[in-house]
Image (cartoon, rainbow over all chains, first blue to last red; front, side):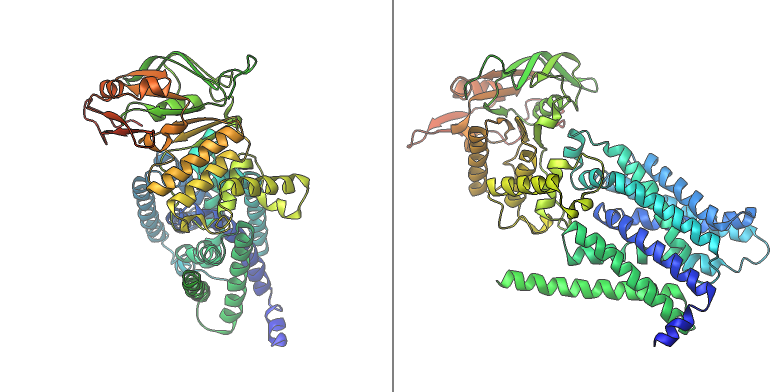
Length: 283
Length: 279
């Protein structure tokens, strides 16, 4: 068993895959936790989908795909923040915000497909852009992921508490002079960064698996915020590492394993919680 | 509560006028509420009760006149105000504990992360002690550790009152805190607010839809109707003649067998004015 694990790390691309996966799982777990609490999962998914036209456009223009991921996700975050009147505040004009987000998502997919068609040489990476790949993550990409991850977590460390206040109680937070609107724009940008990071591992369409499922699972298991965020990161890491190992030995794609393991964890948590509540009611 | 000369009034309005868009909500309002008083803000829907609360918080600028809150310009004193907005209930999926919500009332406006607090420190212990104290005060000890979304309306309301109380405010602005509670909870939460007003010396300004649960506790009544604000002693305002005139529909004030006053016929949604959708 340990021999075979050691065997994995003799391949440099696997070492990089583990490094990238670890960075992404940590950032996604923490930022995703706030996203789930703020009920902005749809927004998070859209910001990840936008990474697809971003990468396609970057390839078309001959610049680094990483740059495309981040540029498009941040722009989309700002568009959503500006276009929805109250800037993605939880509970505020949800239907209007959903309409804006849905529009951005559809347009992003269409634009991505257009860029792929414009790129006459067969862009054989379309599948990996959409569904993820752990092959060929180079050193500089890992460094970029690390820097962006650290910057977003540092930003979150500064605004974490008022952000939580604004998420649970926007009216009172506003009365206590918390810049609710500014925070929600700033958080959407952070979410854009996290979504772009996750997309580079899971692919644009499956980013949901790391951004939403571990935090949602953790929130099912405990209402204690410190414990919950820690669990979200732990679940994200476990899912990512396990998926990388399994994907290394199997012919099937990484995105499938990440999604499956994350979903299985969520289901188990849901079953556990249902039975825990039944016990509570029975008392 | 006796009012000393040095203490500025908790809330003072001088010829104040509020407008939302082009519509004047109320004008020429003169109100003075002393510290430590228990005050009800009454009036038909859309008369501008919540507007008054928002003006006191500095969230609704006046179009004319002056407003002073604890001797300062509105908004300046918000750190000393506990605010409970209208009709809040947490979504069932809100997976965060009651104590966390209370804690946010204490330091939620500060930058940083609460997580660093797990390493202890005197400030952290002090904050935890204060949270435990207010949770105990509102009688929420048995459910404060449960997810807030799973609690009943009355339980959530008590925790929100604890949240408002956590930073030791001098003034509580409560916007319909009894709304959406059942009768038993209405009277127990009303009694709790009164107890806080007395024991902690906190001024309470409470917007109320139904005056009956708090009728026995009031020092003053602020009445908003027909674009104007009237303030006075309950015995002058809570009368059949006055309420009938203010609401524009027949209202009777009766004396119950135990000597308590009861207001009968308070309209649910009077239709005297059009365009009543401003809160």
